Length: 337
Image (tube, rainbow, N blue to C red):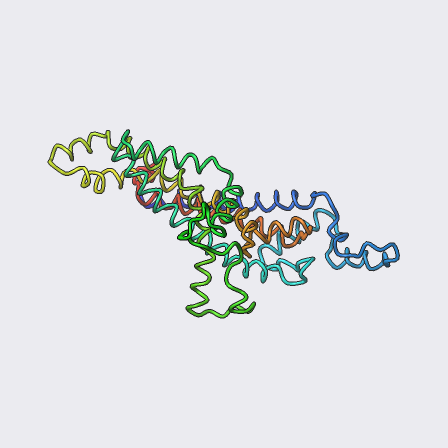
């Protein structure tokens, strides 16, 4: 009976995932299709002597003369078959561009997410353990300060800080202001080796630091709140009465039972970190999906833009779906709801 209930929950939530992704794709098509501006105008020279017939040929080549329903049907079919068309500006296949840029965004978002979760959980757990103490009050105030700071502004501050020497501090480290590795030293063609890997990590430090510090407050505060509630439960009091140390109670009893809210929050944080990565990539000239998105918006590169937005939406939906599965796995009460 429990197994059947588990399969029914998974099937229902998987159906919701599919419907949500379809809704994202349709909404994305409508938003981009009705954007102000004509993409063909950015492809032709602004010359009154330019042959108008060539402009109409571009409309035909990119199927912009088709009806709205025909364009929507083509768009949906291309999304399913991974035939995402050709970029208006770069004249390259969209999937090739996205797959090239996606690896850099995944590196940035992946590193930032891991550090955000680990540091946030440790700080939140220790703040709950030292509730109303100096560490609890100080860490909460500091994290809220950085949480309220706009990501783009914080990115510019750190970018300046690590390319100058504040207050003439000679010991202050100097880090690259932008890019993704030392192109002047290793060339534009990326060939993986240990020196190149170290260069990539060096260029990753400041952007990942921006995202980690900006979003660590959410994880830390939810962890703190969850553990404070858990530490007042009867089974925790029973464990303390058995003579267990506070560290043993925290590690073996409070932490496992305080994790369900954290899993849901982590799935939501993926969306926030991806959104923040777009701003950070543009400021640091980091060649990921975010940097490509802003360029596509400025250049009205519709084929590229529409599938970048779809990928971002699908990533958030799948992250929440995985979080649901993890919650069902670690909390048996969810299986019977």
